[in-house]
Image 1 (cartoon, rainbow, N blue to C red):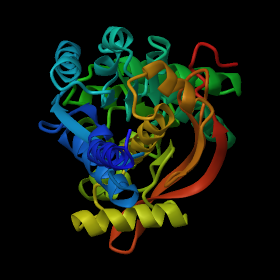
Image 2 (cartoon, rainbow, N blue to C red):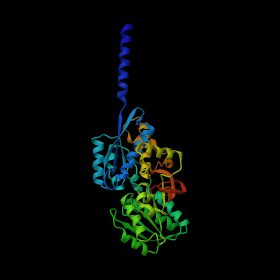
Image 3 (cartoon, one colour):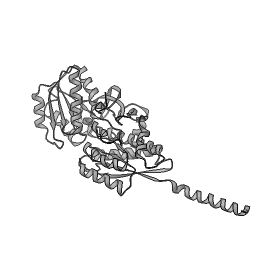
Length: 394
């Protein structure tokens, strides 16, 4: 081969390589199923905003691959529709990851699909411990009701409270919360005098308030999914005189999520909750997170626990994409992030390799006035809390 021909061929090869370089970069799609309309639309809004905050801080590419989020609206708990939307995302949109899921039944519904497609599913909120037992491809960056309720029950007993009544929404997370609180509180020496389970779609809480009043309990442990139901329940507690009667109000932080505080007003004052995030959390990373949110959206009113669930879920997806080099390998992706530790706006996190739920600090918070508004002020921190409800937990 002549030197001229060799040079020409080499030049052609280099040119083709340069042309092929950008083409090798892929767009990796993440399907997010959440309520973007209807009564729980704020949850979907917080997911979407947190994803945008994360991408504004970290970019939209991983190793040259572009991460694109595709959003599907599921306005209320509807397992059949959740499964149909997931099927559409996997088959038509060809997503490499699923994420979101505000309600437990919707998350559980996609287990067969992610197993068949070998696609990881990152749960931004749904909080029933049993979810991650249904598929090895689930990972969760939110919390579980066991995780929040065990330290809360211990705290309530240490405050000298002897008799408590529980009132929860009658579905997976509510039953988890009731069981976790009752088991822990009674083990410590307290008494749960009655347990109320309320239909998930309850809007009239007056009959339940009368039952609480008649129980003789010193305090209530309550869980309802964040949104209109918690708002109505907390207002009913105040309006029916239970707060004035001196009954103390405890629960997971869904009860006093930040978007609801303005509407709750004085009814929220003094409620003590256990949760993994408060917008008032005092750390440099949280201040940067909240500031970026305000820069992008002009307000911080919607920054709440579902925000950090989505923010950290996006971080986990980026780490899985990085570990697999953008290839479609769900099993390898999940294996790569087991034991992963990182710093979050809420504090230090580590993914438990067994439960695939984050081990994290739970904060005891009290709702108090601050300036012209209300905040969930952290009054105690209990670090390294696992998912006590996972079947392998000790």
